[in-house]
Amino acid sequence: MDSEDDLLGAHDMESGEDDFYSGGGSDDDYIESDGDEPDYGFVEEDVDDSLMIASHRSQINYVVLKEEDIRKLQMDDIGRVSMVLSISEAEASILLLHYHWSVSKVHDEWFADEEGVRKAVGILERPVVSAPHGGELTCGICFEPFQREEVVSLACGHPFCSTCWTGYISTTINDGPGCLMLKCPEPSCPAAVGQDMFEKFASKEDKEKYYKYFLRSYIEDNRKMKWCPAPGCENAIEFAAGTSNYDVSCLCSRSFCWNCTEEAHRPVDCHTVAQWIRKNSAESENMNWILANSKPCPKCKRPIEKNHGCMHMTCTPPCKYEFCWLCLNAWTAHGERTGGFYACNRYESAKQEGLYDEAEKRREMAKNSLERYTHYYERWASNQTSRQKAVEDLQKAQLEKLEKLSDIQCTPESQLKFISEAWLQIIECRRVLKWTYAYGYYLPDHDKKQFFEYLQGEAESGLERLHKCVEKELEVFLNAEGPSDDFNHFRTKLTGLTSITKTYFENLVKALENGLADVDTQGTSSKSTSSKSSKTKGSGKGKGSSRNGGSSKSSDGN
Image 1 (cartoon, rainbow, N blue to C red):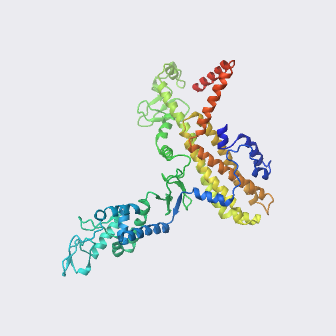
Image 2 (tube, rainbow, N blue to C red):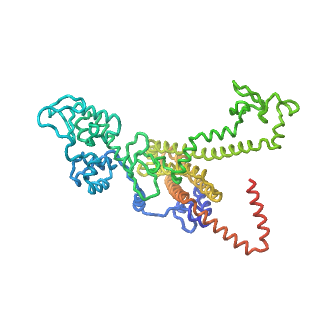
Image 3 (cartoon, rainbow, N blue to C red):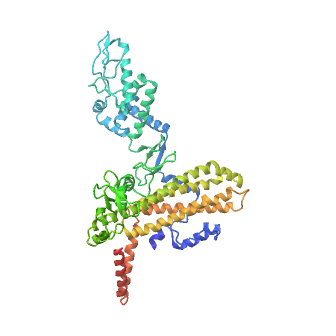
């Protein structure tokens, strides 16, 4: 069908692929396609490397920020606000913290109402209290008298001794990030405590904590930045708005969704991922298993699993009720009149009377639901396991195998990058394939489901060919005693497989993100064609309708 030709891979090409993978086709035939047959995006155009690199960079809509990058951006913002508003850097920091590090917001609010901003933030122009000339001053915390030079005040003028300032600042730092918005110790005073006071009175350990909070606030209060969720990673991601692709990759090799911070999950949207994760962690599947594989004790109602062959069930202490597994009646009521102790026919007669229909229906539905979920979950988890193994294999290849292969084949390691690229592609494809099972679980449309399963099957087949090539066929050259003439053929084959697999999966992701819209178009086209065909075939109309009707009835029955 035309929509498939535009999307991912044609049946016409399958025989050619099989010839190549089996060694029946030449490398030249594989690389230089005649361009006449549809390719489903499997054959990549011959594009200059520099153009491909430039195109790839243009698609990256985020920047990975290390700690020094974050600190530089933070200081640049502080310096800009300080210069434009003609205030100190400590006061600029207070303003930026208050307005969540939005430089434009600071400027807008300041120039609209400078006096109001000063009061709201706590940057006072004149003291609230005036200190007496000469004599001693009383500390507002310990109430001890001190000489004027021993007392420190903010712009508000409230006097406090150095010891009390040290204790006050240390306590608030140890209480958490709230120290960033610290106010004067005087309860009713709005004056903000600036960074200069922390520098003066905080200990070395407390300063480290304070500046850690200060740095983290730049990311956590910024809507365009988020921390990498990988354990121990201190990098952040700055994301450019205006794109629907939220998948980002940190320098620590962690790929995640910038929108929901779960692992990267294209082509599945964040809502579906949340549903799937909740389902995997919820107790609903446990209850489904209980409904499908157990029955409640007629006396105490605890669920019981049948683990022996006979129908004589005995509930666990303290209940110890003995009953029949089939009819759930007391075992003492069973005898020859009920068909014998091990062949109760009450269940069959009761079932015919409809006494067990509702319970059986509920149990059957739970069993089918559990089997369906298990089908998708097992394949989701299996691809996750394969992906983790591929990550380990890539690390092993980079640490051991490439160096060994370079020595055996007399080839520089720089020319063996195609092997690492193949492993990276496998890792990415395993991730995509894993999430297609979550996509398929929540896909209700029958027509789309058939097309989806076809595309998913083709993706699995192509990925397995690539995985087998880099995993199994590479071993031949690693175990060789010297350079092999077939190594160049292997390079061409693996590079080609990596390319077509990448293209296929990219197109698959686009198709699924578009909701398999081509299926709707094709379905409408098929119905229109079928309608026209029915009108032109008068004599065959009744016969065709009869067949279709029979097929429809059979489908409904199933």
